[in-house]
Length: 212
Image (cartoon, rainbow, N blue to C red; front, side, top):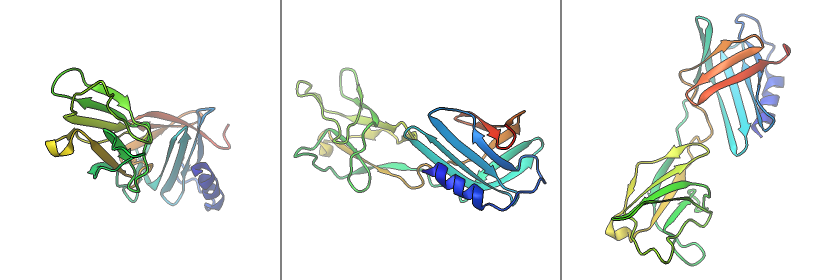
């Protein structure tokens, strides 16, 4: 688990000096099912981890102060995950209407989707490991499909289906640096007990270790 890696990093890190008031070790002030930590080192580097249910993210890179804030830059800059159209494959003897897989062909459950048709309301649902198939009593042919992986918020432009697709689509999630947070532009300010990290996804409160 990433939290164990952080613990090892904290132990192995050199003794921190107090050139900056932000230098130190912090834990995420959330719970009980959320855990995380932030290490701001005196050599200008930082390490971050978070585990929250199925979400597991981490980052490391550079930090610098801007006035009364400390700002972080993930280094190297992560390559975000992507979705691409792939060749159709059978699952349990049939080709599903929509199948989302990893590059190795393993199905990805829990991917939200919307399917549009020439007429009638779109269908909204989520995938199973074996994909999703149109109900037998619905004879409409899918014309476009939108998909979204909700845990890491991976999306793609709408997939427009042609006659050659026969109303079916396989989407491959290419992980790249999935789980590595791009902290560019994320800054934190000191609080009485630690710091508050401001991210586009929302604020995160950290408590300084040794100061609780």
